[in-house]
Length: 588
Image 1 (cartoon, rainbow, N blue to C red):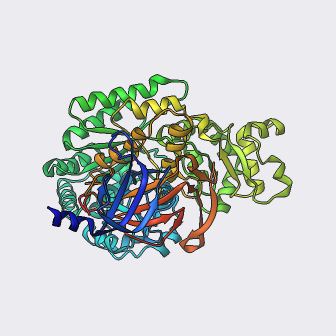
Image 2: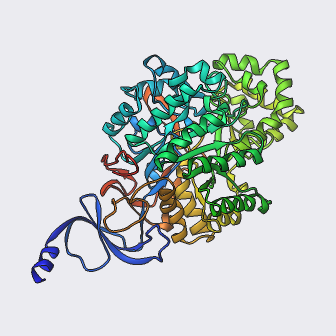
């Protein structure tokens, strides 16, 4: 016994996190203790040290918690040139799921590679030249793709869905996939390919189904393949997961009939027998019954054996956008027509009186459709704020005014005021959505995140819409807003929602919680110092391939972020380490 004790005491750890407040991600009560890491694993939590450590982090006064798990991202392209998947990686995210909404880059025929890139340019606003320059594209099949992704240096862990859109195009061809249901032979082949993908480590499949007037359409304005996908083609894939008894499904479905949408989700859960991540459930300021109905629906289904999780948008944020990178009003034929083509072509159409008249007639419906389909699209046209006038000094006096103020000053219809400004200043004229804390009620958001055991924060869309959106900061905002400032939620519950529950729902094995023997995905932070910099809309940086720019929001207050036991960020600075793993079947 003495020899064993001596042997234990003589071992050397890689990291000793000393004297922090441990929040384990499983809702256990917090406690002050030490944590040791060795060989990428949490070797010990609490108790006497059984040896020395190469690195000691003094966590006195700090929180020690599991890294965050982000289930809804679009880093499929960006991970190839940004191993840490920033913005998310800066904000404590240590694991992401790729291939959401049915979008992705595999499987793909060699002659369809450029076309697959174009698919992501309008709906997710990722520049074509950036993807072209930043991705190796050395694959055709899913097994080849996962091999390439495994070799890619990563600063975060990742799971990957089968993206249903590329699957359908690969089997059916683009035109057929957009115009008809699959044949029985085609369904059999898609099922075979999903089996093949699951065999090599996929976590399930994903779908966006927003109908023929999709607010996230293809680059040419047509719906995405999955937007108009028929039920049986989806059930065909669901039966693969049922047969295997593994995997999960992510689906964004807003087709205009909430009752029918919910009924379909229920049937999908029954056919697959697997967890469904439904995007999204939300709150509505001034209307508590809105989110309480969602919570009751989730509860009733889970009690009936249908495992449906609702992912909710919780981030307070602003958005600065221009009509050169905006497509969320595509449900309006007039807006879609006007915002297709080059900048010069767009300006000409925006000046056309006939198109303007149609835009006026269709705008209210387009804004409402976007609000239902896209988290955070709460502002009216009238409430938009003029943000940037492309350096036109004669127009600078309009910056900071709302469009209703501008239209009143000029005695114009609000659409004329907006579009006259764009024509005068340029297609890159920017408008600002008001800060969304004005649209999110902390009591309602906290109720949804505490009273229901089936709700998960997120829908970050990390990697997408990067010229006007920074959803990857939702983790930091969640802790700042609901825990620290509003005191609507305890840390134990917050970390369960940000790590433990999404890991469980998404099939991550041994992650999302701090337990001995688990991979050491660990964050150490100062709750009092947590911040998002800069606030509201972020700052512009030119760090994308092809000399493209994006908006970013960095984090403050994270003293250390570990992925698989390796320090990736220290005091907010990247170490350059890339210890992330492709988690085949959720393991790695």
